[in-house]
Image 1: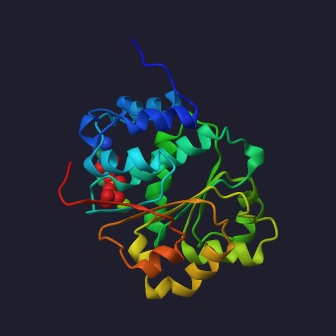
Image 2: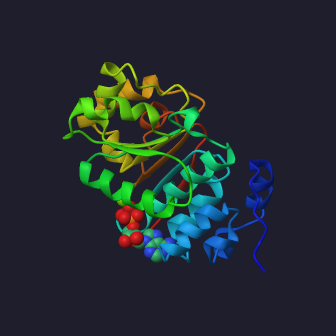
Length: 236
Ligand code: ADP
Ligand code: MG
């Protein structure tokens, strides 16, 4: 018999508080929407990896998470799932505008994340955009105003923030930094500081990288609020 869907965040929190990471032998054990579960199943994702099990109980709860796990450990799904579920629980509609922002250091990574989002999020009705430069800025100009989810590189995102009157981030509920240590490194410092200043401060922040970001200054800069630290040292 199929488990009943819990689509209310408060009830989900109760469920999440009673699950330990070791018990999550399948994604179906977690309080997730039917739409996300279908996307996962159709993408042949059934058993969560360790970093997914360790972080999802917190990220789905609405807590800030700073996670470190090596390349190939499944960090992308670990943030795409809570992103979809947050918008779903908030009954996000196209009119609500931009609700979640993923920042990653390179175009290639942004493409890969976008592909995972399309696959796992295919049953949802959220609109998503890739904002990575290289394409004509004017082409993106109007389209960014209709995105609920944006996957971006820092430079291009800041360009929209500063030059595009159609762009607004006032309603952003969740910020995800993929390869967070690189995003917060010297090379991106000025750009990221400008971006982070623009975002609403009551958002949820999820930071993922291969090495643990424990620099308190960086975490404060990224807007982390009492984050949970997850470190995973092995695969699966
Ligand atoms: P990372 O960002 O940690 O380097 P990725 O998110 O790119 O890792 O995932 C690495 C690979 O693992 C991808 O091919 C992805 O499809 C696969 N993968 C992720 N999670 C799962 C899962 N729960 N079950 C099976 N394969 C998975
Ligand atoms: Mg990755």
